Length: 230
Image (cartoon, rainbow, N blue to C red; front, side, top):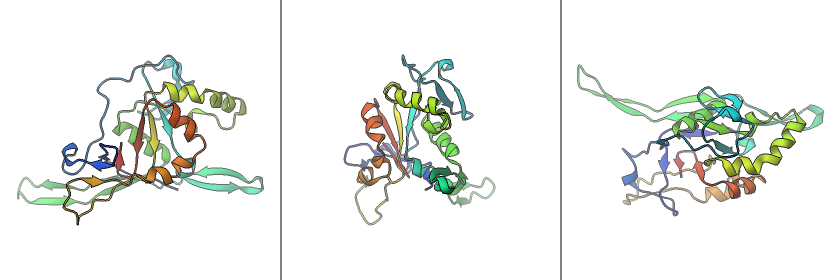
């Protein structure tokens, strides 16, 4: 499965899923970025992803805090069965979508206004994660896909034993829940928009066995959905 991420994310500002127009600009809300670097915790993972170039670096060389990614593996690409072994592998054909909103520009010579429709960019999962992290000011990220050598059994077992420390010491956890979204109700006179909060309960993310540990241990959780975050 591939994700769709709209860059003009709306923010949920209360527990009932209501999005206040006072919190938005022209119907959308630009993702907030931390004003200062995240504080460095006592524990640092062995490896982290540097978002600026998506390179894996040693956690001991990073002098600021990090975030941890929580997502459903099946939503990071296509899951296929490998030959007679029956092993499940992930194939990423680069069909994750980043959608940039349409905009109106005004020509200097004639003064005419011109509408530019939304643009779609197709990327691989790493490109999607990089864009989301840049939008939310995340500079260093722990992601199992890149920070654990899946072919090295020893390394994998060691990292699994460290999972509780990785998520407990992260400044916040970024949870990808593509089912989370809101659909504007044009027929309603209400100025408050409602998000589908039930998506958290039926999403693929909530069905992961590891999510219980990750969500329970994390200090804070940033939920990022199709077109809404909280």
